[in-house]
Picture: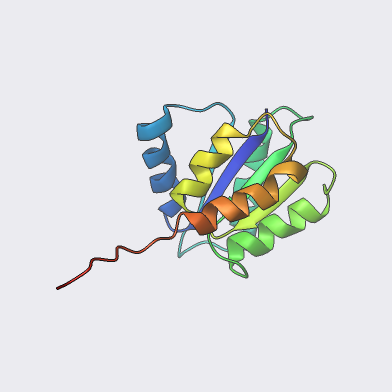
Length: 132
């Protein structure tokens, strides 16, 4: 089973994780990482390392990050770059993406990345009402 780190600017990662628990229940090996306004990249690095320490050393880890190019992405991408054989990173975090990640945790991170990208895109919809 892959481990998951959900990371964001502010407390969005904690909120989306809480929402996922309401739908799917508690999940093992899932950690939220927040990047707060008064913090720097060293704080964020420490938080990612603390989250990784809660997993088994041989776990594959999926990083679900809120925004491409932001501090959580930049710090996590350095961690992933050192562990390409077992870590993967996807940006554009949303609730459908997180929920779907729970259903494919038995696959390798390399197998599920493109699937989760499609799930995230498919989760964006608009309500179109016909008016007469």
